[in-house]
Length: 415
Image (cartoon, rainbow, N blue to C red):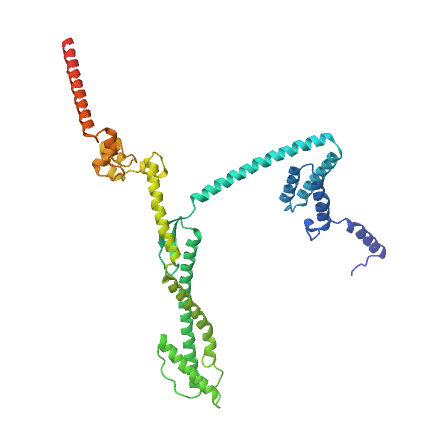
């Protein structure tokens, strides 16, 4: 048996509830940053006030950046800290505007500090942009005059070095899409065969239900199956028009056959159109403008290589020069070479065509731009000069031999 509390107790409970309920914390469903009680004072009083009373353009820039960086704060505690600091700044700006000399000097130093930092960041940004531009130039695609042959995936394209990612992605996506279409084509063909067999089975059931003879089932594929299915569907359509009604409404044969085949026929037509586009892409004629660009690129490449060789001969060390100097024969061949052969190989890889390197290249039959330079440097181009130098060389060798014998005789007499 339940005990009913007295009316005084019930009234006391209602009084306690009315006192405690207003003290309970109620979490609003709307975030604080969407409330007008937060947005209106922050934007119209604080933000506009800071911009209005800021002593300089750099401090205004700093205020805008701080508000932009803190506009995504979602925690009330973090937002409160920033708002307290903002109202503190607003007070300082107003006091400095009213004539506080100490705050004016402080804000003046802050203004110059921000200006210096902005200039430093601006130079960093310029240098970074210059580095990025140089990196972009190093990796920029270069057309050397060769082409990517037409195929099912692309028309005639210029072969760029390095090849841009969007060209590679286009060719890859078309290959994947074509493979997917062929797989879908086989699937549609199998489904169409299943529907034709279902139509033939339903046709046989209809004939047996009407008491007519049904022939022996045969395994058919391709065109034979399609012709047989169309013939049976036509007979069912004629039977449905006669006065004697069919035992049931056909589901897979008769007039329903075209409705089943419509999606497959539409998709197969789309696949055939895609195949036609692939074949047209492969058989497309090369654009005249692109061919002319390729011819010009080849001429420019020859001109650039010729100018590069000329700069190398004049003494400039290019990247190609360094790469050529650092090259060497394969390891299994270099291991069998003598030190003299390695020295000759190193001379052959040099750019110089004069002096000892030119003589080595001339002896080895290397094509040189000026094959007679090494003779001119050694004085061997003129026969008279060559004879005089040969006579001087013989005299020097004879004097050296006489002195060697004299030193040997002196050493023998002392011993």
